[in-house]
Length: 492
Ligand code: NAP
Image 1 (tube, rainbow, N blue to C red):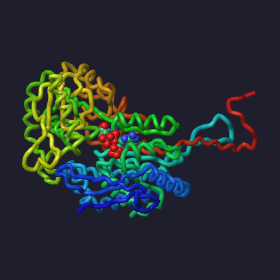
Image 2: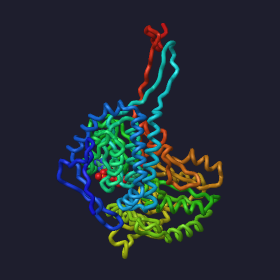
Image 3: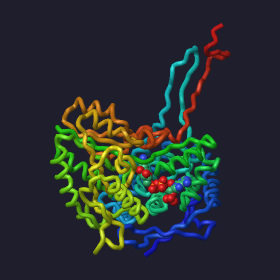
Image 4: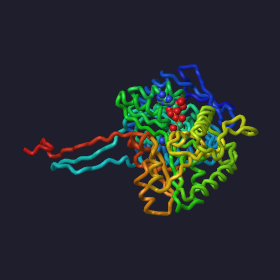
């Protein structure tokens, strides 16, 4: 059955002022799952008006009370985890174990950030004058415009929405058009948890209409965007034009460095999981394996064998390792990059094609692909966002790090080694927001900051202790209880 959704404005599921709709399809088999309104600029304005009205009372609501609503939503999500996990697998195509893991991530983050309502820490600071007190307090930035991608349809919205709510912001949220169902279900959980009308509004529709208007509108004080670099640059320039706060979480080209002394069995499992889990469509997916020359041939032979043994298929089948990629556009982009790899004379070791035949024809399946590449090839430099791994040879730790850093991105990275000195050097040397030691590039936990360096992002880190930085302004407060005018810095 095709579910019909509306926009969510001022506490009600509402119709769009326009007449267009779009379908959400299952990438495994083309089944239409849901229909959503293609929101208009006018819809964004309605949502912003609701968020503006709701802001003063939400700002005055004690942060602990704001956190309680988020905690109740976490409990509701937990009750719905099974249903949401399966729905996510059908909407996005990631295998059901990973889909359930993503729902769990939203629950974890809501639980974590709810507690922040009892902290929202400021500082007390010494002053240079007698009978004077100095401190900082955190206040909500205002209306937050949240724009999210299709690859984590509930976890990424939960990071942004949870942190913005506890910080006291009101919200206009635009989920990705490929996967708005889980975003809508997240909104439902918050509605059922008792979130007051207008505090959270959702407008679905195209990025160039709805997203662009959110990014441009002067009522939006902070834009928090996750998506591709090109879109991120556009959003950044919209925010810059009116000096809005902009947080950007963008692409990655994440390396795993495997040194000759590493536990190779451990590394093998990690590489398969990081490169081909979620069909390589994680911002933190490993798309470059930098392999030490001493173990290169032997490890690569084993890696190809293990990769060829991965089962690709229906994400709801628990025996499947790799699901489909998200839709025709993704499929075409990935296949184009595979052609580019062949043209630049990278050596194709396995995969490299669309899967066809029984169980595959109605969906978008690409066989897990490995290329032997050179660091300056496009497939080794650009984000492909699919099940395609470039393997690069390095003669030393230093060369491996040089290769790892020689890309425009810097999100996640990993090194496998038993040498503790090298491991600690790598933490300093690799240019990325996250480094794993003896673990793959994926697996972030909600209580640590998440984000990247270089073209992977700008602005505050999401999640962890820094989650609220994006959505709060710090005010410095001086309380002078001397009863006379005291002049800082002026002694005469
Ligand atoms: P995308 O095409 O950039 O889209 C992201 C969001 O922006 C979608 O909601 C999209 O709407 C919207 N959008 C499109 N054009 C816009 C515009 N002109 N103004 C405002 N919003 C606009 O990215 P994607 O394909 O969904 O996601 C994949 C990318 O996200 C990859 O590069 C991946 O690395 C990155 N990512 C990064 C992180 C991180 O934390 N660093 C996490 C996950 C994903 P429509 O869906 O309607 O087009």
